Length: 249
Image 1 (cartoon, rainbow, N blue to C red):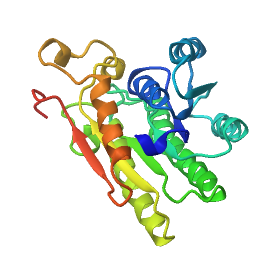
Image 2 (image 1 turned 30 degrees about the horizontal axis):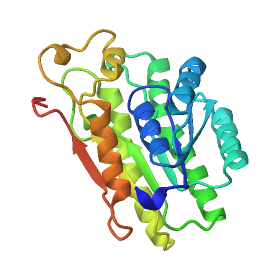
Image 3 (image 1 turned 180 degrees about the vertical axis):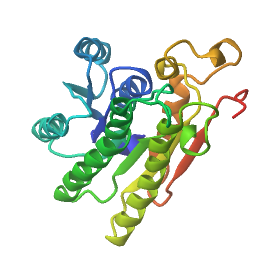
């Protein structure tokens, strides 16, 4: 992480879970970080927790379903730091009750806008800023899901559709960057069940897996991000699948 000290990262969805843990790791490592979330109180608490660390943290409320909010977030990034070196597209939502045959259109739209469209907008604006600053060695991390690599059983098919799309988006971005001779690296990290509350929210109640197996912790995913961004510039860690040892699917 030494070569990233003093450089700038944006982490979406930093108010809780994986994003929160990653923000704290980056700031502790000496990076300047902008993160967003919908819960202002959680963001303020995160600011307090990062106070006194070697890096710097700036937070902003942002609804990832609003392009206006995303645009304002990038305006904040420009005014505070004027550049971007690492973009982590972490924000995501899931709803396993929104099936293909009985799901509500509003639930489908929320997943598509947050898990796919918002990532595309952030990536476009992030690469634009990198190019303006002539940054040719940046890194874009997409936090996906094991559900983007296999069909997750009886529920969650529409959520899985969005994560399959994110997997293709990651490879498409890599190829577009290579075509322009840009050396910015792209990584997809796809966790299984993580102890964040995400799976409880997606299922509408406590996950049965938490009672039967040892699930991943947020620091396990943070370690994977650090491994990817910490690799030498000529090494691209493209795709990391990480699941609990006891997870079957």
